Amino acid sequence: MNANGVPGGGLAKGLAITLRTMTRRSHTQQYPDVSPELPPRSRGVIALLEENCTVCMLCARECPDWCIYIDSHKETVEVPGAARPRQRNVLDRFAIDFSLCMYCGICIEACPFDALYWTPEFEYAEYDIRDLLHEKDRLGEWMATVPPPPAHDPNGEPAKEELAAARPAAAGRPAAAGRPEGSRPAAARAAGPRAAGSRAAGSREAGPRAAGPRAAGSRAAGSHPAGSRPASEQPADGPEAGEGGRGEAAGPVES
Ligand code: SF4
Ligand code: SF4
Image (cartoon, protein in one colour):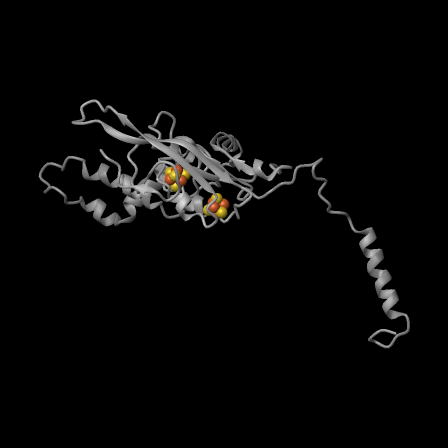
C-alpha cells in the first residue's frame, strides 16, 4: 500500500517510471568513438606560448599548488644606438605538473603577457603519474588546440588597453593652426569622451586582436601580430626571475 492508500499503487507507479524510461531516447555520449562537444572555455589543459613568456615568475608565485617550475638565465643583447647593452631573460624550463594542478586558472589570469591559455583538450591521461609533468615543448604543442575567442560585442565598451593605445597617438598629433596646443576642436568636445572609445572600438575589427584566438577580452595565440617582437624580447614590467626556482625573483630588468 502506498501513501495514497491504493493497494498496488506504488508498484504501478514504479512500473510506469520504468516503462517511460525504457521508451525515452538515450542521450549517452559514445565516447571515445564520438568526441564530446565541449564548451569552448572548458578547462582541459594549459598551453604555453613560449615567445610571450618573459620569465616574470608571476604564474609560479601565484599557483596555489606550486606545480609550475621555471628555470631561466640572463642574456646580454646589443641594441643598436643604445648606450649600453641590455639584458633579457631566456626561458630554459617551463613545466606544469598536472598531477598536482587543480585547474583553478590563477596562473592564466596572473600572466601579464598572455603566455598561458586554456584549451579544452583533455585526453592526456597517463599510466605513470610522472608523465603528467608537461615540459615546455609539450605545453607549446597544446597551443594548436586553443579555441578562437568569441566574437566582440559591437556595443561593448572598448578595452582600457585600446584606449591607452589610442591616447599617445592623439597626443602626438601636431596642434591645429590657430588653436592652442592641447585644446580640442568643438566637434570633439561635443562628441565627449565616447569619441575616443568609438575610434578604438572601430579599430578592434581590423586589429590583430580580432585575427587570432583569444582576441580582446580573452587572450589568444594570435593576439600578437605576426612579425611583432615577441614579449620575451621586451623588457619585463614585473619582477624578474632568478635562475632555478619559483619565487626567487631578482630585481627589475637591467636596461
Ligand atoms: S591552474 Fe591553478 S593549480 Fe594549475 S598550474 Fe595554474 S595556478 Fe597552478
Ligand atoms: S610571462 Fe610570467 S606569468 Fe606569464 S607564463 Fe611567463 S613567467 Fe608565467
